[in-house]
Length: 478
Image 1 (cartoon, rainbow, N blue to C red):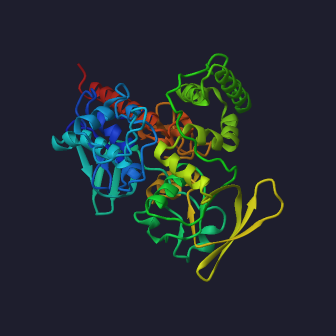
Image 2: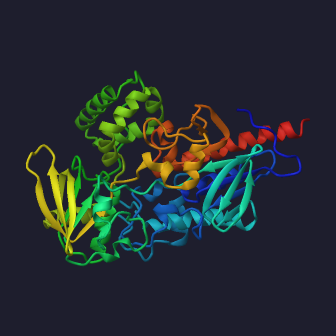
């Protein structure tokens, strides 16, 4: 599909839906890019500030960045910018736990949100970026442009739209959502403000899921003085891993003679971990190398093998790739050592409300006999339900119904091309509709960690800038 030149009497309008790190990153880099003609950049985000999103819009002191500050940045070519920003402001002066013995910084998560917001501030002040503090309710294609409606009655026309919305909320497994909806301490979405306020100090808590969100929840409960027993249940019983005690060098090369199956890739990773261990290098260096080569490795896999990898290996990848901050790891280790935290491999077969309690039937993995347990609270932390993204917002489902969007075949988000252009139901890409951030993960592979999210935001901004330069040339030929 070829883009028509934008109307000569108007500056091109780029609408970015979602103002978290991904959307803010696209706006930031686009405002600084050579676009031929400066576009009107609109970011639709109901939060008060751009750059926070779900991850960094938190004042919970237990929520910390999971990557050392020295590797966090909105600039792909300047990974130390966030740490320099912290040091220039002495921003962790009141946070005694931020600095680790090796000197690395793991500050509270809200600080990274403040950093991104500070980068956007001058662009907002001089008008290069405009913050539309509304929620989008509708997006339609009309007469070659996009019409965007919001919850305050506004109607905006745009030439290019970038979808940079946040992860879908977690989905409670099976029938739990309907069976437990009436219980005051059934928490289906921990991202809602004050979600954990209902948990009492001695409540017996079942946490469904065992990844980063579960670790955050357990750390937050400890910060609040919770002393009751906690069981974290997940299908494989894998808890999130921590960082190596000292930085590890990258190890291995998985691109040379890259395998074309999930099984062969797994075998090569295992061999590399053994070889690294023989040289005194931990598994961290191997996994970091896989991550560094992740895009090319993902591209080499046929769709069927990508599906196999997601279905069978993703949980193992997630717990090794997405590591928890040392402060959070220490909380989990202490809770396990004290017998307050139990980790179980299995599933929740059934649950029902009985008075004030929640009675759960747990099915341990590889065991025939179920366990019957009573809890005071149940918290769902199963991670984003990427496959249900189209149902999370009416405007997304409407775009799909009108043929503009489709689900990625791996079930990781929305289908898009290698240029991040959305692929509709017909299989054709729309050059005026782009996907930015984790929802493009099915095409680009590793798009959940902060470094990859910011790199992708930079990539999408440059894709849009290139389209605008072509349009400027077509509209004003020499």
